[in-house]
Image (cartoon, rainbow, N blue to C red; front, top):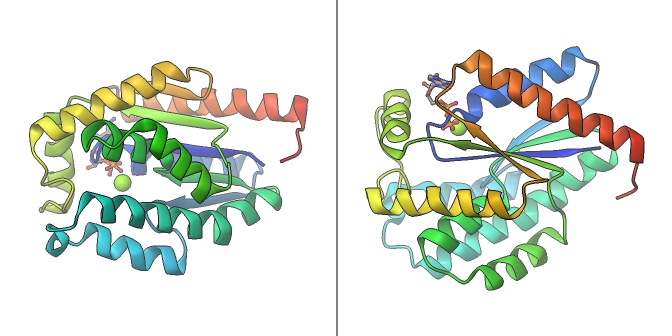
Length: 214
Ligand SMILES: Nc1ncnc2c1ncn2[C@@H]1O[C@H](COP(=O)(O)OP(=O)(O)O)[C@@H](O)[C@H]1O
Ligand SMILES: [Mg+2]
C-alpha cells in the first residue's frame, strides 16, 4: 500500500520512532511490515554483515556502494514489493537516500551515477514518504555509543564525514519537499512521534483518495 522510509544518522531516533509508528498503525487496523537496510531479507542480511563488520575497514568505496545496492535489489524483490502488493504498509529503516547522503555527498560518488544505480537496484520503486531525522552530529554519535557501547564501521568515521552526510541529507530533502519531511531529532520522543503520525496520516488519506496502482 504505502512505502515509508526513515533516514538520518545513527542515534537520531529512527528505531525508536519506527517502533512507535508501527504500534500506532497496527492499532489503527493496518497491516505493517517493518524492515531495514542494508539487509531486510535472508540474502540481504548476509550482505549487511559484511558491510557493517569493523574488520571490513579496508573495503574500497566502490565495493561498499555495490554491496549496498546488491542488498537493496534483493530486499526490494524479496520483501518490499511483495508486501506493498499485499496491501501492507512497509516501514523501512534507511533506503536509497542513505546511499545518496553517505556514498554521494560524503564519499564523493556522482549523484547522477547513484540515481541511475539506485533505479537499477529498485526497479524504480520510490518511497511515498521519507522522514529525515536531523541532528547535530556530535549528539548523534553520543546517543549511538551510549546504546551499543561501541562503534560500528560507519560510526567510526570522522566528524567531517558525518558533517558531509548531514549536509547531503538536507540538500536532498530540500530538493524533494513533497516526499521528504525534515524532523528535528532534538525534540522529545512524544513530540516527534506526533509529527511522524501526522505526516503518515496525511499520506494515507492521500493514498485513499487516489488509490493509485503501482
Ligand atoms: N527524541 C529523543 N530524545 C532523546 N533521546 C532519544 C530520542 N529518540 C531516541 N533517543 C535515544 O537515543 C538513542 C538512539 O536512538 P535510536 O532510535 O536507536 O536511533 P537510530 O535508530 O536512529 O540509531 C537511544 O538510546 C534512544 O533511546
Ligand atoms: Mg537504529
